[in-house]
Amino acid sequence: QVQVVESGGGLVQPGGSLRLSCQASGFNVGSYWMGWYRQAPGKERELVVGITSGGAHNYEPLAKGRFTVSRDESKNTVNLQMNSLKPEDTAVYYCKAGATQFFEVWGQGTQVTVSS
Image (cartoon, rainbow, N blue to C red; front, side, top):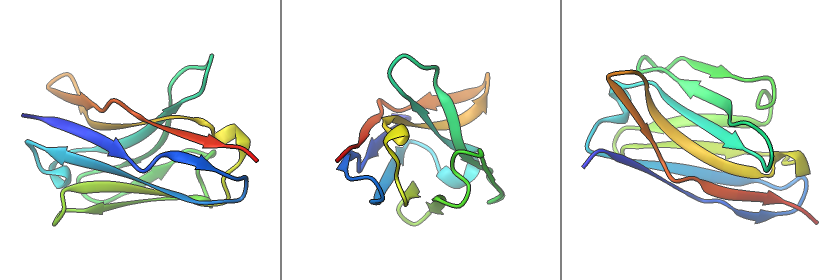
């Protein structure tokens, strides 16, 4: 079964860190574009960062300097290390595999709440 499952969300204080993980099954994360998105309450879903099958990263301005994406093909995961978290980073974070009409898989999301 082709799917991705996010984990690692939770409640963290401003300035803190979280590491999200996207566990893929049914396909190899190294074979497709993989991305992390987020959706805050009342807002549209937005791209945080993508990583191509060749390993190139593209970070959105909201993530540059604070977030780091990595891929572990031995575990078939794509991870998102988030540092210096701000209250405005509060959102549901989603993992997405693929970016074409032929292959696109979304996870169910993991909640990240940044609050004191």
